[in-house]
Amino acid sequence: MDTIKIPEILLPKNADMTLWAVNACDQFTSDKDYWESLENIVGNSVSTLRLIFPEIYLNDNPDKRIADINRTMRAYLDGGVFEEVSGGFILVERNTRSDTRTGIVLAIDLEDYSFERGAKTPVRSTEATILERIPPRVKIRSEAPVELPHIMLLYDDKKNSVLKSVKRGKVLYDFELNMGGGSVKGTFIENAEEVKSKFYSLAKNTNFLFAVGDGNHSLATAKTCWDNLKSTLSESEKKVHPARFALCEAVNIYDGALCFEPIHRLVKTRETEKFISGLKTCGGKKAYLLCGGKRTEIPFLDDVPEGIRRLDKYIKEFIAENGGKVDYIHGLDELEKFTAEGGVGVALPAIGKNDFFSLIASGGNLPRKTFSMGEGNEKRYYIEAKKIK
Image (cartoon, rainbow, N blue to C red; front, side, top):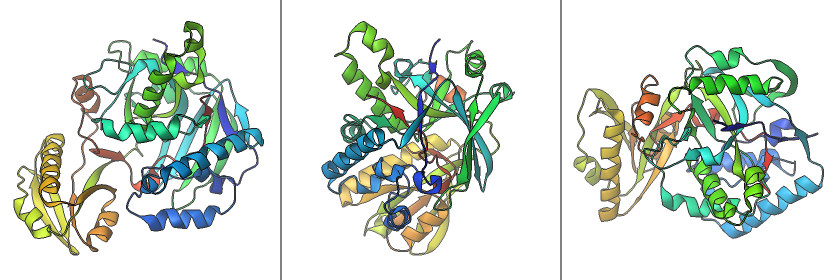
């Protein structure tokens, strides 16, 4: 197994890091106020906000936004905004209201990853990949000279052997995050080869090294772009091309601050009563319907993934018949806010960690948007970058 690579990481030289780092692009997709407030905070400062495509704007003149992103990436590269950190990984300690979450920024070989259900590759998808979501993201990535990850990989390490092996070096950054994201500290890891060996020892009997916890469609997009590119390369070029390796953060699934939060469903429809009357649920767990500022408890299956599959099927059929739209909301407070303005929310129960890896190993991909690792403002902020051209 040679899945893990020691990357050449790009960090900004002299940026105001609080303005540099911004939240994952797939967060707050119904909350323009969040992104407009962030725009006002960042202003004209160098920032990853200029290098990413917030998904709330996917249908808002995307070609111009993509061109602007690529132009800014090249300007940052040519203008000396970045400096390179090589020869090791980065230990990331993220303080949120859930405590301190610890991860390792590294690169993985996309040849060892698959988003196909039932794949036995060392890096595996955890949720169903919606294939129609990939082409617009490929369009964003295909001409980009650098990547910035919000991908978080999970690994199964009850004894915490990987983090215990880490030898800390220089502190690379330590700052407060904007928009209520807490704070983050990045430290150079000096013994990357030893840490790699500890990772590999976790998978020696299963060949299952990482499960994709966050950023499933981003990693699927990177894989698709690499598959499109490699047919144009020689065998020697394929081995070393930077697009073959994707930058990610790996987090122990048993990290005490890694909270598995449900991703709720917001159905934007005028036919709220019809939606509610047609929804049939059962089971020993609890979910909630939110509509017009009211919250009503409903039963939900003990097998939460199966309950979500059934709910999503009902929502899809309802929208096909009655019109409307579904959105996926992180956080009960956000869901309550939006349902007070219209539509129906379904607040879902969380899934547990204990059987997570065995479920994925058995080929049981979870439904799309089953879980989230923390609330929206606890997601990975863009800090590190890596060249892919």
